[in-house]
Image 1: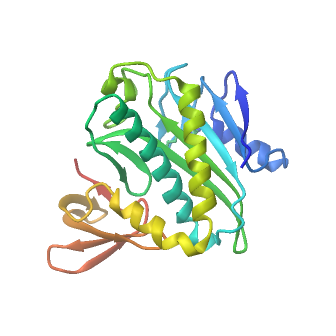
Image 2: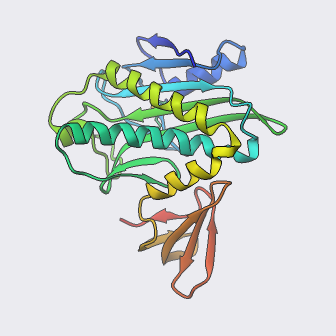
Length: 251
Ligand code: BTN
């Protein structure tokens, strides 16, 4: 894919900007909204995304994944989160850091038990086709302190103790996403990406504490199905199928 970087000196939210432009048919696959100064970044649900000016990677990539059926849109989550996790691991390893990089379901990127990156997908679906996908990515690179009360943020600089070149990181990330996108848009490869995703899953196959609308419970993540639902086992052996937003992880 040919990426076309649209560099905005300042914006409320790269996802918000992309959403506006898409309404007027102004963006195409491969367009990447980039900024160093996002003033009102959006996170999942009603969360905000904190980013100190000039410090972090903040982008929204436009995809037109017509090969992926809307019912299988979770493949996008899998391929993007794996690309991010892979690149973060490369940076850590190249700097002699032996931390574990994991994906906390569905698409938070964790180093050990702290969040280094988040993704906000907005998929525009018509019938069974995903017409556009806005893939909003925030990766904490050079910000040392987080002030807005996110539960457990961490940044590359906290881990490797040196500055990361945001442009170099961006181009390497786009390359990895492109490779994954080409390969895993094809349904013959869905099984492969599913198992790669499971292999990187935070708290996979271990008992841990969670809560849902009925209160706390002990559970074990045993799978993620093709629709992106988390499959958990309870202590009494029963199975719980979880949609995004239905449970919280207790740290
Ligand atoms: C989350 O984990 O809550 C998702 C965070 C996504 C943040 C990125 S930063 C670039 C893009 N623009 C936004 O407003 N949000 C996403």
